[in-house]
Each structure stands twice: as structure tokens, then as C-alpha cells.
Image (cartoon, rainbow, N blue to C red; front, side, top):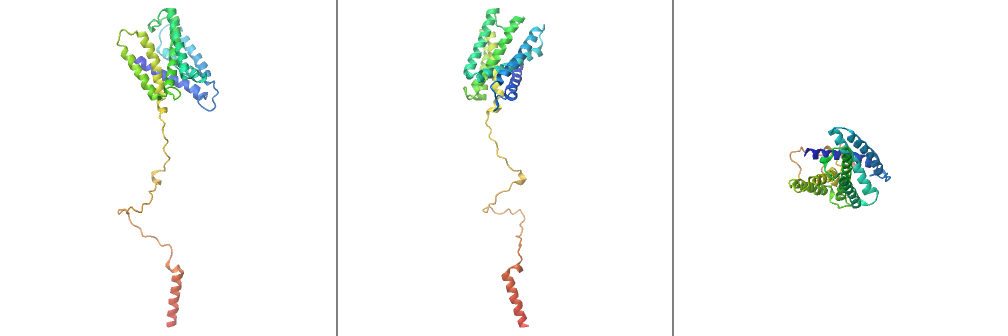
Length: 270
């Protein structure tokens, strides 16, 4: 179980690095895309993958850090290669997934015809290890293409949450099938290795699937004013203030004339 958990985490890290290179740094998801970003990313990460495999084969003992570093390298090159096959070549997700499936089956077939077994328990010499890492790389690439094909709107349009449910259910079936002794363990291993790849891809992009509506920008609470409601009686708890009179009565012309007439009448009586 710990192997598969670390594998999912390692593939997540590798996929993030591959997307950062091709989509962000090389701008394949922007308006300035040249169409060669996925190919350049595949070349860069392919060289890193070959170097990691060479070091892995060259060591005499098993080093966990080096092993998982090579797994991450297979994920990065698998991510960029899958995007190049499905998006840049122009054959779409269905055609790209079919092509990558053929390459994976060809790798397993050549491995089996050359050494007589494709079991991971036989990986104990450089020649076997070379077939092992090539098959790992193609399985990572196929998993990436299957995840995009299932989730994207130009594919099966299940959404990334739906893709996670589909591949999660398939992984649960593989886990249940492990208890049947008649099913070959080698088949279950490679099936689980492929299925865990699109499962992680769907879960990674799940937050981007929801179309969140942007909330309107509101004012702070201390600036909000309630509209006047004439049908609502005034709150008796609030103090009442008398209306201010800004115009003096003595300045009104009619009042001034009336006061002047009163003064004249008083003078006449005097």
C-alpha cells in the first residue's frame, strides 16, 4: 500500500513539473503558443529521464531516493509526451491513447519475447531494467492520455470528478481481484500502474473543474446604507431629533412687510 501512495505522490510532482515547463514557461496554454512547447518539453525531460535511468542501472544496490527520482522523471516525460501526441500531432485524445497503447503493448511484447517474462520480480540485471523503465515510461504516458480523454470536453466529457470516479472504481476492482489466485499478479501490477496515473491527473485538476461565479464586489459594512422605507415605522429606541430650520422668519419678505406695516401704524398712533 505504501508503494502505491508514494507512487501517486511522485507522479503528482512529476506531472506538475511537466505542466509548469510546457504550459507556463513555454506558454502552450497562452495566446503566444508556438506549437513546439510540448515537443521541447519532451526533449528536455527525455534527456533527464535517460540520465536518471543510466544512473539507476549503473548503481550496484537499490537506492529508494534514486528509484523514486527516476519515477518522477518518467512522469514528467510521460506528461509532455502525452500532451504532444494528443494535442500537437492532431490525432486527438482517442488517436493518441490508441497510439500510446500500441507502444506500451509493443514494449511488453518485446520484453517478453526477449527475456521470457515481464514480471517485476525478474528486474535484477541491466538488460531487464532497461525494458522495465521503458515500459514504466509508456504506462505513465498512456495514463496521462486516458485521463485527459475521459475528462476533457473534447473527449468523453465526464469532467475531472467523473474521471476520478471511473478510474477509482477500476482501481478498486483491481484491488479486489488481487485476492483471486487465478489472476496473474503481473497483469494486476501493470494494470494498477496505468490506472493510478489518470486517477491522480483527475484529482489534481478537480478544483479547476468547478465553474465558480465571481461574487459581486461589495462595500465594507460601515459604508452600507439601508434604503429608506416609508412604510416602516421609526424605531422607538432611536432618539428623535427636531428638524433644523435654516431660514429665519424675519428674512421672509411677507413677514418683513407685515412688521413694517405694524411699525408704521404704531407711529401714527403716537
